[in-house]
Length: 336
Image 1 (cartoon, rainbow, N blue to C red):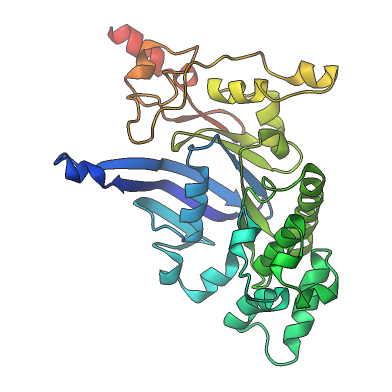
Image 2 (cartoon, rainbow, N blue to C red; image 1 turned 120 degrees about the horizontal axis):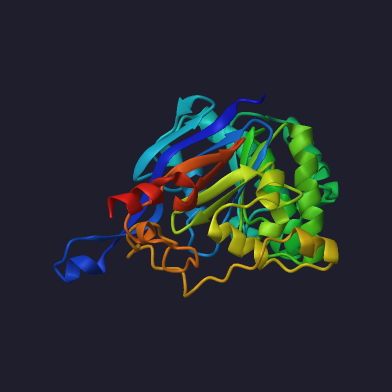
């Protein structure tokens, strides 16, 4: 069984809310990521899925080093990596790369595509002299772009092509782990399919491991090895993809899956029964006591509003954070 390339333990990322100090109150914090645990195994794709505001992108930025964690540990290939990327060893930065959601803002408009792709390889000493151009051409071919694109500027190509350039740039350091932050959400559907197929091929070709951030749960069915669902800064459920779609446990997961549009009777039969939530996602500044989902959950019990559930195993590699499966509800009722 493949080993873990990334281990995240009790990861937290809080952002202080400045205006609370103006009101002379205790400083408030936005709990974007609030104590999560997960692993990414060698060669797999872990899909981290959640609605806007769930904390999935903050998790990605903290793992890659754009944010320093408030608490917890991040281990990469057995080595603890702390703080921001600027504080990390050069070999770690080389081996962990990221593809952002919007290539229009992540690519330098003043540089040619060739310069953009070559820069990371130069910084990490992977090319010199005449090998630079060969490296750029090889990477362009890997992402299915013509070699003469190295002379173009980002503004002269389409959004899908810019994302291919961003992927080529990420591959320039020869990484083993890539964070993909919604890499297809800003693209047309036809281009999305091309990018996804390319990412699958590149993963096999370069022996990559992916942490794939997305709000599109249906995208994970044919892409992810395992799926993790985030809600209000915490992971609600994590399971192998086949098991996840066949037997979702958490009410929030069931709600998400039951809302996915289907186009055939066969897909309708696989969809879990409709779970209707109530209200909106609470603010991560004012997280409800107990389970964060309980104000919206149609299956909420008394314990849910008072005790924060812990992850429990419900099957092989299937974990869920819910009192329906913990046995704590029975103990809570007995105590009453």
